Every structure is written in C-alpha cells, then in structure tokens.
Length: 127
Image (cartoon, rainbow, N blue to C red):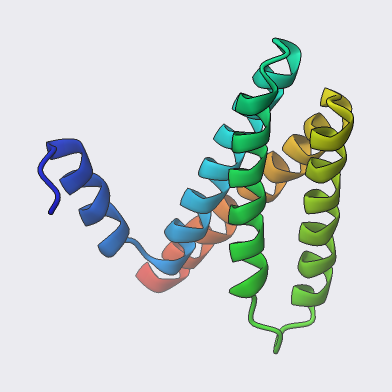
C-alpha cells in the first residue's frame, strides 16, 4: 500500500502518461542512475557504482524489450541500446568512468530526440 504523497504522485503520473512520456521517464531514470554510478566510480564507492550502473542497464534492457520491430529504426535503436549496455558493463568491470560517460552522452541525446518527437506528435494531434 502506498502511503507517502510522493509515491502516490509518482504512481499517478506513470498511470496517466502517454507512451512517449513513459519512454522519456525511462531515459530520465537511466541518466540519473548512470550519473550516480559515475559518482561512485569517481569516489571509489564501487558498491554504489555497481548498483546504479546495474539499474541503468535494467532500464536500457526494458527499452530494448519494448521496441516495436515493425519499424526499421528499431533495429538501429536495439543496436544502440546493446552498445550502451556494453559500455556500462565495461565501466563497471574496469572501474573507469570513460565508458559510462559515453553511454550517458548517448542517453541524453536519445532523450532529447524523444522529447522532440513527443512534442511533434502532440502538435500533430492538436492541429
């Protein structure tokens, strides 16, 4: 049972979001976890790094599993997600931020693409 107002708000926002907004939320979470993972590596808190990079990988895996493969772009996105997961694994294994920073850049870029696409879709619907 959800008791905190924040948890109720969070559940409500997920339930009332469009599919595009949900994808953006996933990107937001992955970006946040990668940043915390990078902080963990930088501060030599490897447990923090491992947990948060793992959470980012889980989100990326979710993005992979929800792709609609009837669109040609899905193949490219799937490859990109695979590569980002590889980067996060390498960063976690080697305890170096370089790979995680590269994955973070891709996540930010893809997020912005989804934001623009989402705005375009909303504009098209309202016209």
